[in-house]
Image (tube, rainbow, N blue to C red; front, side, top):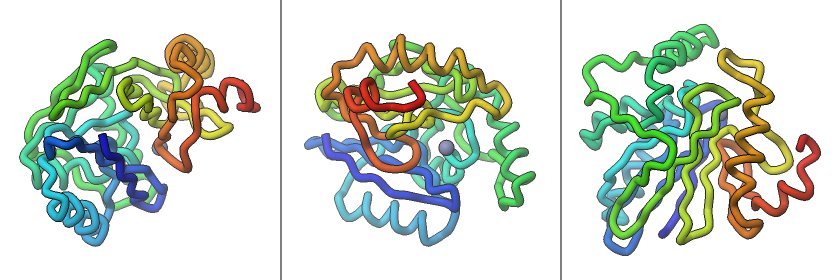
Length: 212
Ligand SMILES: [Zn+2]
């Protein structure tokens, strides 16, 4: 599986583009907030001739769904998120506007699709396992590629840091629970690709994260 990371919108969200040798691909957290950012993403996908099969969301915070509507309309695909994330999308739009961002609502887009813990998302010959990891907010998940020993951790775990828990539905104990009982069941060699910032590994965080 190939992975390309883009950093989008003023909050610097990592948008991950995944694809394999079949040409099928998936996007995680499309954060595009301007025409230029959409152009950068869409032109790369076109140039590489990637067929996007899934638009995935790690959690329903506005910086992670900034480009959701634009990409849903562009690819004609639904947005896929945890079943508990759906009802929080409206709050995310409200929050974005409160912070002064120009944020479109989700009128007129293909309806959402949901997944739960343990579901497998497939494209080409690739698979992503869904881990339900609440704590940063409800409806927050991580996606694991076991064949590539990589976990896309959203805002649950960062390099030597953890997700904030001071937003609505945040819960510090639940977040630690998600990290220890879900993410730390993965082997040390697994690469962690977070929602913001650079990559790390499960082992590095298990032994060096000052907040755990
Ligand atoms: Zn974020």
